[in-house]
Length: 390
Image (cartoon, rainbow, N blue to C red; front, side, top):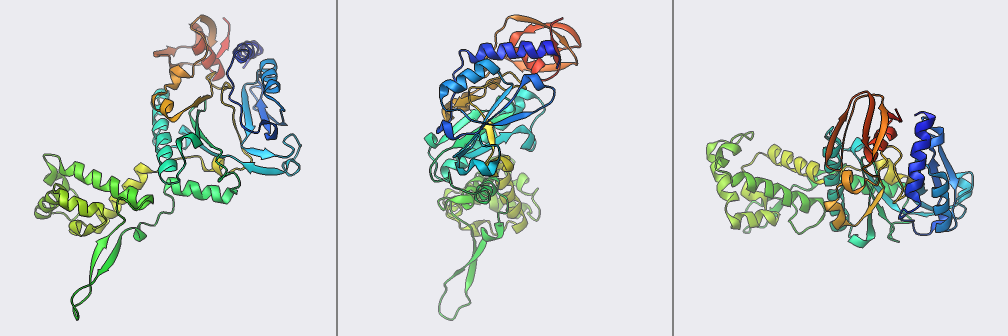
């Protein structure tokens, strides 16, 4: 990034911060702050151990310095601007989740598709946090990172004192890591007549038991019923290991029978006893994969982490780090809604071919002097794909 580009980007960021709506964290004076400046690029140098006593101080700093990236600590400290972590005296920390395309398996290459994929993971995480952990919607602050994903901020008093190991256990649950399916699918003894041999039946948690057992129950039965509803259902089930035509027909009949399905929902697996145990295991593993959420574990486990400031700009995209309600998140289109710069044309020198999808436009530029809308030009400059001016 040449000097002319740095000056241009810094001036545009300053222009934005003069009127920006910044969402400052609670207990502001107890937070440590860190920034990365345009002046030192292409080096990425984090200047941290800063502290601000008021909203006015933050606003003045952002308008004057216009850093490329702005962060604050998830932790609260007695002395947030002390030069060492020990001297800061840790008090507590928000619970943070970071969902980024870099850490989500199967994320598409297309930026727009990638962001949609990450949003789906984010909504899965929201479902886990509300249904399994009991957080309310108002407890969870959703934030678009300005780049490739989303953050959740939770400041519920019950989580503030959690240590790193306890936070990592939450990540293990959310990701389904270490889940022992042998403890979910078990055999249960059934009382018979006096003197008769004790019988057993296959059971697993009902749809009302909560936790992963309930999730697997609902997901697996829904999947099997969807298969059974198809015209070629019997043929589909013969594709499973160990299931012949006769057994396939019986399974389809069971899954189309509401009374039998009600038994399955209550955890009685005897109705599907003809299904190979390996198939049930595979279906359960599939349920865990599809229902779990992929979060960046080091971020959640780090009780001294710095996180992006909502309302600030992301120095690698020029887009806004945007606070969202859950309802807004579902409809949020980052490549339109997080774009803050104008459509006015800007000349720039493209260093390498680059494709960008923003504000409903698919833009592909070749090397050389080009003219692009300001928001796209800033995006390319922030990405290091172009320099300002002809």
